[in-house]
Length: 194
Image 1 (tube, rainbow, N blue to C red):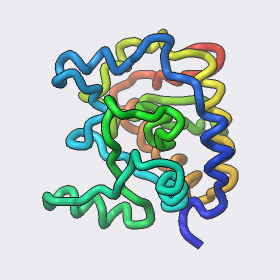
Image 2 (cartoon, rainbow, N blue to C red; image 1 turned 30 degrees about the vertical axis):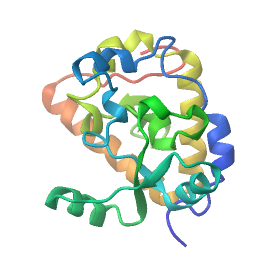
Image 3 (cartoon, rainbow, N blue to C red; image 1 turned 30 degrees about the horizontal axis):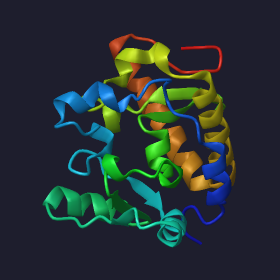
């Protein structure tokens, strides 16, 4: 059994449909990135897909192809994430919103688990997006519908996939340590707000 085998990708795709903001958030970074949103450029962000998800997308669309690692860092990343498929799409100009990967749908957020290992909401994925995604400066722009859908998505994924749940729990612990050293509270997006 591999990571993600217990997941129903069609169902997960049907849960996570809302845009992050009421406006096209790609327009925040596109003007300074040659007109392309940073999250849609494989040179800056490489989507990590579950193997079963990638197989489903290959049957549904010609949008995706496997990522080809060229640099030492890319090859190391591919080795470290060998249980997944690294992929690239045809970029923003050819986006098929219904065929965006789960990684695309959740970026730039991650689930946040509190000290009792309860899913408390969403946090900005600092490791993947800091310095790349300007949405962090627009925290109040994230829609309630997106937050609700994302929390439902992460709840289902982490209930069905223990490896993913453990990974996200460990990421929450690391985030608490980083913010603790800074003596700052962690901004957590919940249905009630940030």
